[in-house]
Length: 344
Image (cartoon, rainbow, N blue to C red):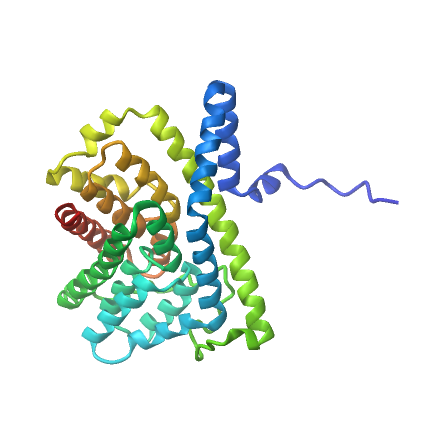
């Protein structure tokens, strides 16, 4: 006989298990169906068509991440923090801007580095570059905004890392950067990382059962992750194009002036929670008159200050270091936007 005396699961507990991205997508579509029924089918058609158009890039991104995770290529990160400080900054910026690392892997590794005296300059270079670009992000950006924009963003990510790392090294003896680590850094993570970035990569991962399983899990996990965020983003893009007048975007974020680039950075910093979802949104803004420079500054500032990236920094360092991190992000975003405005 079934146990009838067991108390039901609290509603708050059940709601907390609902994926917010899927929930938001469903609620948006329901709202469109109820309040603007004629727009429902065009919105779904636009989002579906956009997903099909970027499907090859999504598949490449998913399998690339799976391969890198299964081989343990992320272990190469440890090599960036050995040697002369200037070399460390360079390698940290390059690896941060080109490698796929989630915040929960980075936090315990960076905590250990800072605890044993690794230079904050190299850590800052990695922190600034890491959220902005990785193989999956490059594929999605190329498919939506074009190869040139993806290349420019990659250079901007590395350049921002070099900028922040260099300035941190230059002012390392100032009061701002002295004693950066919190007394008890919060180094918990979602990945169960005990000894992060240790060991050597195994490129032929398919020869080992556990690595094949890692490839499978990473591929599925990232496939679902990209699908839900891009489906939500493309749906929002369709609604932005339909409901927001292009003239409004053109007046606020269009033109060739420096003000639009600065505004793009200031708006981008708090604007989005996920860098992948930002790509279709920027595509919509560009279609409605957003300037190239403002688009780049929006993407750079928003990526560095997104919630996962910011939490990784806030968890480990004191508020003044976190403020410097955000300041470097805004400065780098403005410079990247200014450069792209004249190059594009």
